[in-house]
Amino acid sequence: MRSEKHKVLVLPGPVEVRPEILDAQGDWMIGHRSAAFAELFARMQVKLKQAFMTENPVIVQGSSGTGLWEGASRNCIRDGKKVLHLVGGAFSERWADISRVNGKDVDVIAVDWGKAHTPEMVEEALKKATYDAVCMVHNETSTGVTNPVKDIAAVVRKYDDTLVLVDTVSGFLGAELRVDEWGIDLALTSSQKAFALPPGLAFATLSERVLARAAQVTNRGYYFDFIEIHESLKKNNTPSTPPVSLMFAADRQLDDILNGEGVEGRWARHLAMRDVTTAWAAERDMPLFSQAGYQSPTVSTITNSRGFDVDAMAKFMSGKGFSIDKGYGKIKGKTFRIAHMGDLQPSTLEEVLGGLDEFLASLN
Ligand SMILES: Cc1ncc(COP(=O)(O)O)c(C=O)c1O
View 1: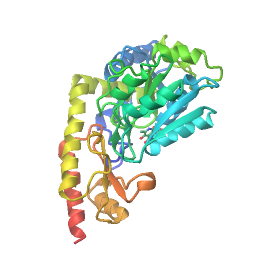
View 2: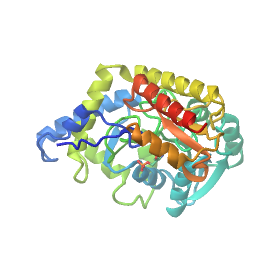
View 3: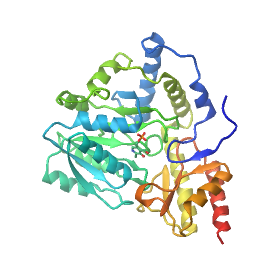
């Protein structure tokens, strides 16, 4: 039984999950070494490949996205080699830290928070040094910037030994991403953002180049050893016990997406919601924090130019039935974020913006 108390999540993860998806988790348990599980895993593979637009296998892990950050860094960077991280917000910074704490030799291209990386910056860095991988964040959730992954990946792919590793935790199924066409070796995500599932599952596409690289890395760790995970995947299984209930939910959600609005339709709905939010903010003299031309389809980070108390704003919105964000990291309070991701519909976004208008009016 679900509780009567319900606030609609307008957060950049975890997001609102539809009742049908919550219900899908409630099916009878199956053993993960059973034929029924292998069937579930196999049919999810087909659909995940469609969602990521790839022919590569898609690993499914009981983990949040952070686990696959660590897995990507450990499996894709050899001892004595370097990795280049593109840093421009809280999450890209954290991935670089994870590479460091795993003993990797990290170089960084840092841009001011709110700015995007450009292919030219990456090209310049790749001319100066050799890297095992370039790590970038598709959609920087703290600043609301979507990086030009397609163009950056095209530059990196000119260098044969350099892998293209992409965090699309808050981009996947909300912002355009074409893994194979764009030459992405690894795209990782987690379930609780634009995929609109409960938290607890993480996914990554693995190219043959990633698997070949992992085979050259001696200390890949245990839980996120891509070679082991891939060996199990070939048998439609996982090395350890997976969160089966969450996989039921993911299976149902993939059906609903692929048989419903489709991946491209989903991108279009997110873009439309981004445009409504951007126009709303501009009309109220609250510019977006993110650089024009790179504003995220899934989350808008809005400058708090009126200097209102974000706690009071969140409390007011809670009274309206919405759980809303107050900004993240060093820009918390100076900005706030409106997440328009997942299964959120434009009509609900209008209600959120209407509630915020009432809050702004209450300040006068
Ligand atoms: C862009 C990005 N990458 C990675 C993460 C970490 O993912 P998780 O919370 O699933 O570990 C987040 C979380 O918000 C994120 O926004």
